[in-house]
Image 1 (cartoon, rainbow, N blue to C red):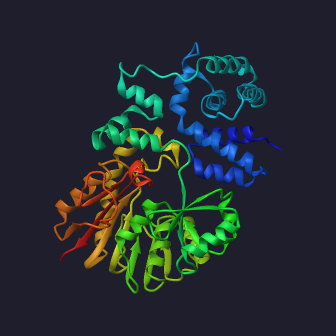
Image 2: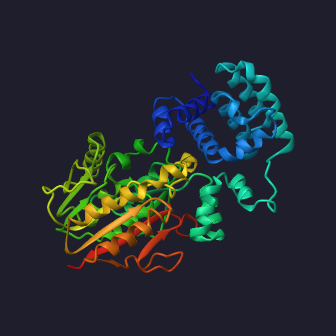
Image 3: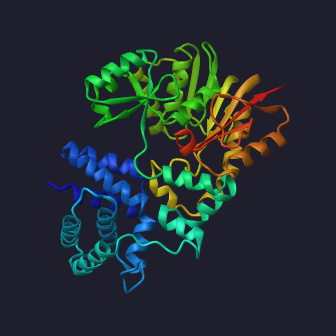
Length: 439
């Protein structure tokens, strides 16, 4: 059986070569492993830690190479990152184990030729510690290496939110974020759910949202009896705020245009007390299946999930009281959950606002007079957020922006738009705009 470090290496090399999402790759590989809970946690700590700190790690490694970092083969680079991460950021791992096990990884993964290099670099890191550039010489470079974010993104966040908030966002992205559960009020209450979870050894913590709790010491969440019985689903508070902003009521017709895997639809259905009509769409058939499976587990029967392209008007859908378009985005607000997102290029992001605007305009066509439309993203990029909504309001005079969720703290006291920042709201980075059709 493979040991924990080998499995962590396998996950990291797959993410690098396939450009795959960390959470999906971790779940896929660990679900078929036979690791105990301690090794399971160790693998997750290394994988997410290496991804979170990759810029910092590469800067440190490069200090001890005679050739450019880019000349290293992926396998050798991953092994070095793992070793350096253990030396610098995992206090409970003995230095000798971090170094010796990294050398073993090189020898057992077709990189024996580089075992001496791995050994030498790690010993130098052990001796000299974390390497950081001069703060006074280049502040942005210093922040980039310290927090492991690309300089272009740091510059964007400082411009949009100020340096203090930019640093706060980056600091909050380090370490694993809380796992938040939405209580399925169709089957239980928060107090009863907490009792059930505590029986299974789960630690529960209250949140500012009435039917949301943070979970700790869960192990594999899908193995919990309370999960199997459909007593909750996992959903960050930001997404729950988004569903709350929609304000759906019993008996209404509601559309969720970019719904998969279905978390917001599930919360909306619970707010509707499972009465009314909730049409949930996705462009991919297999993702529609995820919505259906989740709704069945939770005992929700008002959701009708089907395939539809959010960019194209579908006359068969009809008009709705409330429409949610949580559009595809750059994901810059969920870097703490998918740390590899920070390595996206600006070019990957620049094309998104036009797509998002098309979806928003299309979504507006389904809204009844007096109805509400929510535009939301899980990104912190004003080009994808405020700019899209302002353009829409300028070109669609039959809609107005309305203030929702007055109890939620805004970083800039904006009445029209809500930007949730991780260090202020203890949520994912998120944007919400509520629009109402006036005529």
